[in-house]
Length: 394
Image 1 (tube, rainbow, N blue to C red):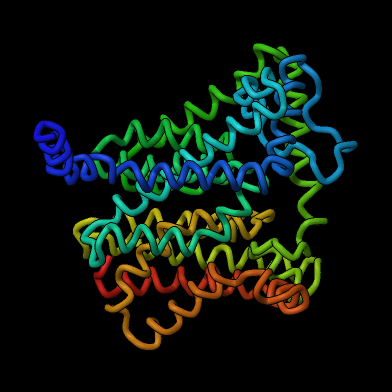
Image 2 (image 1 turned 60 degrees about the vertical axis):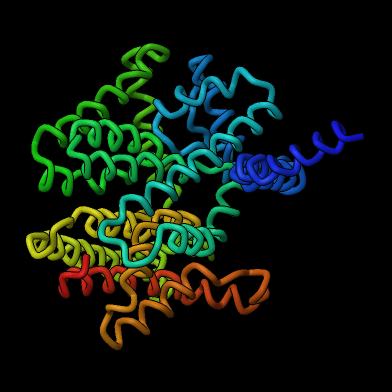
């Protein structure tokens, strides 16, 4: 009996060490189980936007027209090179392709959120607090993103990756990442002027070079004339589908805000141009005061990514995923904001990120979105960032 008792005692002695080794794996395993459950019960039968990308990829493999009015609401609206980049998914069966894209989207999500937190300089709050805070704030947008099978997580990872590259003094890498991001969503080009001003001509030239190369890639499949036809068709599709979507309840762009307030027409267009110019001018004003802080890049970059869904005429609410850096900056420095900015920013972030259809109900939520309250909240957060710069806090 003595050896057996001794063996049991030895195992008990090593048990705390074994638990310590296993503990870091518990949370990742729980998240994997949760992801599998959510995918099988909520995601797998949806992902309609991913279906659009996969269909376009299949067409690109056969050099078929990508942009067809017969596709109705689910027209492909991305540049031809993006369809070609999605070609591997066209070679998979639909179920496998969905599962792989979902897994990649989760990887993009982890990278986007972790890099957004890690990039924030001179953090007042701990990394853990900021991580869980941004997960809670972005949960609504992430759920919508994954359900649709959208590409904003990839876009966010590329863009925040470029910010990280700037912070470690790799402007050429930043230029490559922004150039690639333009093919995921063209409005990533909004950061090009900032990159030119802060990182120099070479970084900006790399963005332009990557974009030009990407525009030429479809020549390999479509030929010169065919590629020009696809680019022209892309432009027509994007411009012709803008007006019908302005009054969509989930459109939170400045163009949609004015269209909902004063009606579609020249007045709304003029107000959109004017308000867009004003918010961009405020960002430029923040740039001009960058010398008052030691690490100015984060706030300036966050200001631009926050504005992307506002400046794009088809800025759907889930594109506010890109507001994660802005929200992180505002939350981290919230205690240092002066009244009434602290109250205004807190309410704006809460209404922008935590207004759930399931809690508010169809009627109230519909009215909430029809009044473009989310757009106004995003503008308030943008103003809060400028206030932080003015007070030399970020």
